[in-house]
Image 1 (cartoon, rainbow, N blue to C red):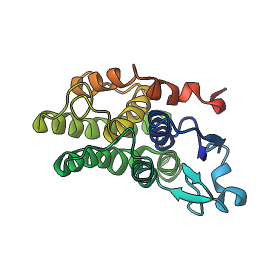
Image 2: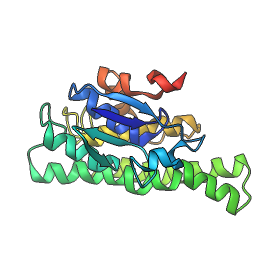
Image 3: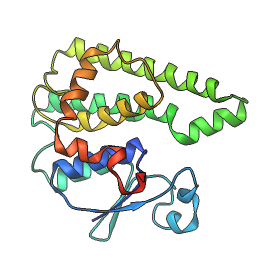
Length: 212
């Protein structure tokens, strides 16, 4: 199994957590996003979207992090990262969607590059944009956790799920941009609990080969 990845890519981080948690060995293949390696013909031949991550499993290529997470859950169901109850599954998928579909697209590298160039924003302006959408997204997460009352040690009670795989990398990104996370105590307690688990710790950016 191969994972085309970049150490700071939160989408890749999600998949690294899941692979580690399920005990699946893989070969990381680094794609340097700031250098534009994802736009090179060699990588486009692997993933025409030119995005990371891409998972290669037995000559099959799977793209888009949420699709990869679902594939891993279906192909390698133990230990599970989705609960058995349909309503619990919907809850977990909703949290995944808040991160992957509402927060991340507004703050990924290509979006930040575009707003910097198109609107002439300096670093301070880009950071303000980033922090605004982090705050908006984490307000939703915190409110959702509070209203649903299903969280415990992790997003769903004491069971690690795909929601945790999505939440943790987004917290890392928020910390990198010095976002104020104090208003989100439930999310941060979950983050701290997750980071005590070897699967999460080993997947963090600083521990990746291409972080050097």
